[in-house]
View 1: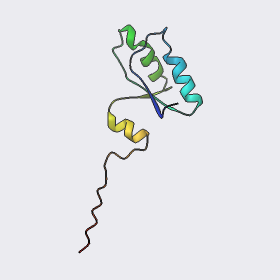
View 2: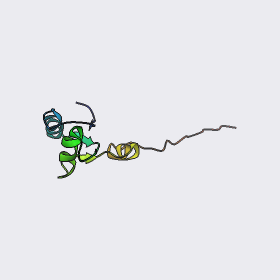
View 3: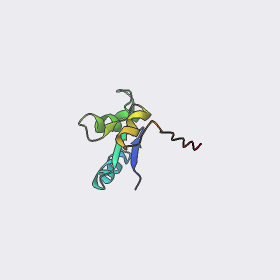
Length: 81
């Protein structure tokens, strides 16, 4: 199982709901990209976001935050005279 699953497009008949449920059962992080309300390929993602069954994916910084990744790298320079 991966650290995160990101659902991008999914119709009602696709396996996005099953993927989200399985990932959740393993305490995995599930994000979904919101789409147009009238598009069939956005239906399942929007249905999972609305009741907060998954987190909404809006940008990479949010992904890094939710995975506890540091978006700023520390550079340590060790100068010895």
